[in-house]
Length: 174
Image (cartoon, rainbow, N blue to C red):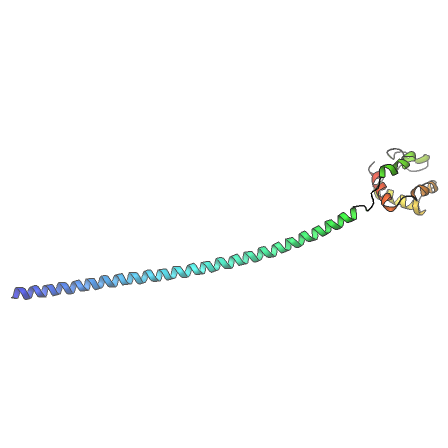
């Protein structure tokens, strides 16, 4: 009987110790599970913060790109308007046949403008277009010229402003 009681006490003791070990194991498992849950929560929070930062950065970059694009478009529009204005200014409204017009001049000034007309005028070869245009306009209005003023006035009176400008450019290229 003592053996049975002793066996029972030892068994209870062992079962009690086993329960403590089981409780301890359960407690440890529960603690590990809680730590895992906390880690998952922190990771989820960090992911959300990172996602928000990326979204904010995308919006900032998009805003900068949109503003820069608007500025570039305005610059292109301004350049296009300037180019269009330049083309309008540089494009003559009238087509001028300067070769035919200069054939009349070549009779006195030479094919390449290297002669002194009737040995009384300056050689116009080498003059720039502005100087030639100013002289031709002066002949036309009677405010320019010496000995050849009458003859040149009659020749130039037939020419319009566009023809004088085109002829001046043509002669300046000799």
